Amino acid sequence: VGGTPLINNSVSYTTPALTTLGENTFYVALSYNGCEEANRLPVSVMVNKVPNAVDLRAEVEPVYCTGEAVEIVPGLALGSSLNANDVTYDWYFDVDKTQPISSGIVGGVDYFIDNLGMLAVNGLPASATPYTYYLSATNKNNCESEAGDLLEVSFKVLNAGPQVTVTGAGN
Image (cartoon, rainbow, N blue to C red; front, side):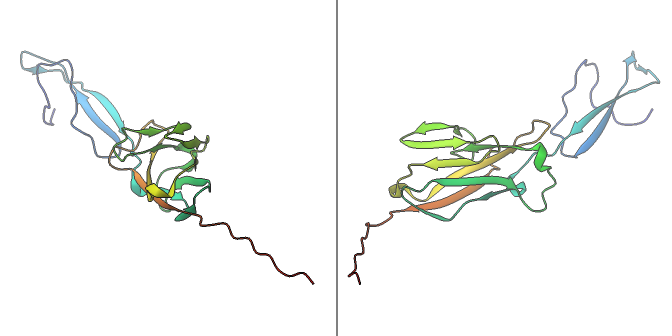
């Protein structure tokens, strides 16, 4: 008794987007001809935190020279409520997650992602600098960062300049 019916005359119900983290409980009651069964059945739904850009960080140098390997190490931002042992990382070329990065060669550039999510990039030309990649995280409940809410990671690649050889008079 009490509460507001969410639906009537249906065998299924789809909730609106649930935003309250933790356990959310709904109650199911059977009714027939307007007479409601006295015992309601609780149905619990667990809402887990979805990792977002604020939860993430990436270690990368701001500038590299042509020919240098770029290594980007993902991790959790200070103050994130996520557990580092329960998170995996994925990389994308775009914030909308339509272009995932995987190990292999793309356009003459060699990409490698290790089992901890570190992204190594070799062969980036200075002509297309700055470079931007996007970091996503997935928690132990298989909730992945939503498209548009990834960590943007940028750096520059500069020409190394000419090689200089110094010779001097010997003593």
